[in-house]
Image 1 (tube, rainbow, N blue to C red):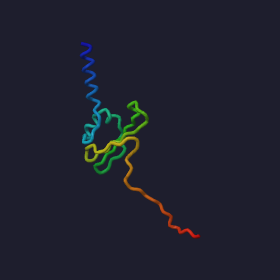
Image 2 (cartoon, rainbow, N blue to C red):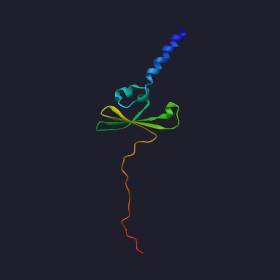
Image 3 (cartoon, rainbow, N blue to C red):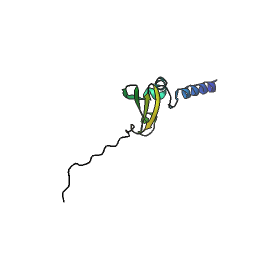
Image 4 (cartoon, helix red, strand yellow):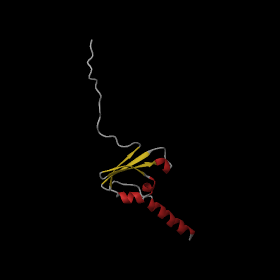
Length: 98
């Protein structure tokens, strides 16, 4: 009887630890273990970003970022927020004289 209880308790915990996946709804994410400990860091025009400190999951100090568009998970990044695909160069406008 005790073994059966432990088995079902293990299954219950396992079912609650669902890994986030691309296409997951934002509501499903919030109900998951990850969603309960993730912090919303940005929200604008149908886009939402959550940050998860992986130290809370007994891992090194890493961060995971979950990007939602229109309520669906579209990107997951680790360590740092996604960097825009724009490179800005500064070029001096002063002429050098010889």
